[in-house]
Amino acid sequence: MIYLLLSLWSLFQTPVNSNPEELGKVTWHRNYNEVLKLAENLDKPVFILFQEVPGCSTCKNYGNHVLSHPLIVEAIEDEFIPLVIYNNKGGADKSVLEKYNEPTWNNPVVRIVDKNGKNIVRRLYSNYSQQGVVQTMINALLESNKIVPEYLHLLREELEVKQGQLKESYVSMYCFWTGEKIIGNIKGVAETEAGFMDGKEVVRFKYNPDLVNYSTIVSQASNQKCADQVYSNDPDEQRLAYQLTNRKARMLKSYRADKTPKYYLANSIYKHLPMSEYQAQKINVRLGENEDPSDLLSPRQQKLISLIRKNRKKDWKILFNRDFTDAWWTACEHLN
Image (cartoon, rainbow, N blue to C red; front, top):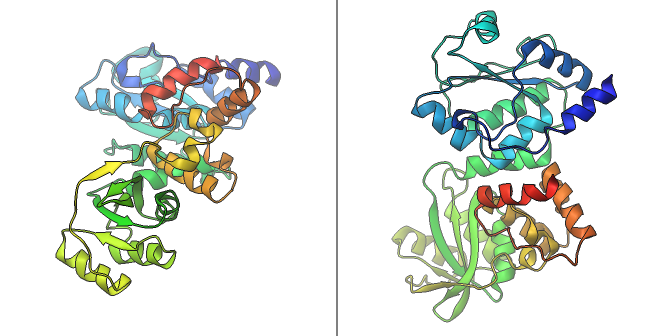
């Protein structure tokens, strides 16, 4: 019986696009009692979405923005058993609403429950962000004594880093491929790019000033000879740059990106994987340090890279620098 359940479950591991937009790309179950039986047999928590279908703009945005993010979809489907309950229907849906005292005709609510239907963590409501659902999933896995996959930790880190107003800056060094590797490994740096300015190799980077200050980045880069020259029009940054590098900062000039973004990644087999920009940044760092980046990949990304390795002669597209969501659903066709 368990083998049969596992076999049936494997059929739902690649999302389809036939959902109403309020439900995103997740492959949902609809029967509450059957899902609890699956939870017991598969030893997985249940991810319940209470959703209005058809719904308001908030409901649609939640489906299109949160429940369509490739790694969020994968985490919901792989680490949990997904169940959707319509909050504007009668019958079995209404019975589950009443069981959890959930309101009808309401904005999205998420509950993560155990095999007995009991809450593992607090219900998620009035928070319609990617950060909210990712943190809730991580908390639920920890409370269930499950291992949180590294790619999910990385996604939480990415969402945290990119939250708020990012600042942009430029530094030059002897080799921008090395510079991108060094700066991309600094916590709080959201984006890196190798390019040219003032006839020199530079790294353009964006960082979250709430998580890391400008002095820390320049200091760490300078200590590894990756901030020979700082470019900035900001008086405070110019003053700090002089204190840290003993060189006056130069004013910003015309910038041109290098033709080979994320050099170490772009020259590896991983270039054929769809991935977020932040994920690409961290994988590029790992490869630049001759370290294995596979733990930063989701199970489906690992499955795809395995397929690519077995079929190296196939004309695989370069996907790492394309729009993540678009590239992901294209790549998933190879996993069917």
